[in-house]
Image 1: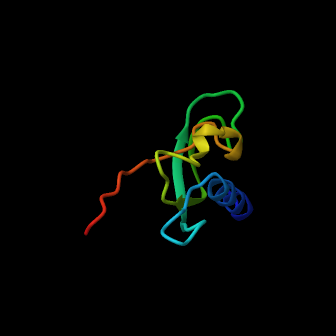
Image 2: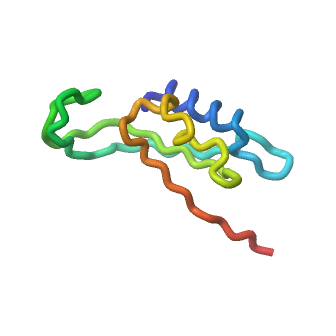
Image 3: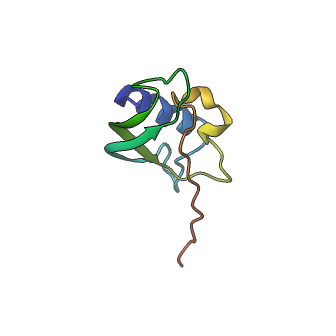
Length: 95
């Protein structure tokens, strides 16, 4: 995703209730890096060739979510990917 797309997704997730921590809202952490993958023989890739290895700039957004609330999987139009990579990790509160 481009930086603008990341900003839009982060805003949409925050508006849906993600990123709440105490008295704070829209809390997030973003990591950027190089994504590597090999595309299958699908006929119409969004970018690159139909087959072969590809590298591209990627961004990962981390946000707190209550019961997957605000998760882009609920509205896949928010991401430009056929298969958005979404991970849900349970957190344990330490007292």
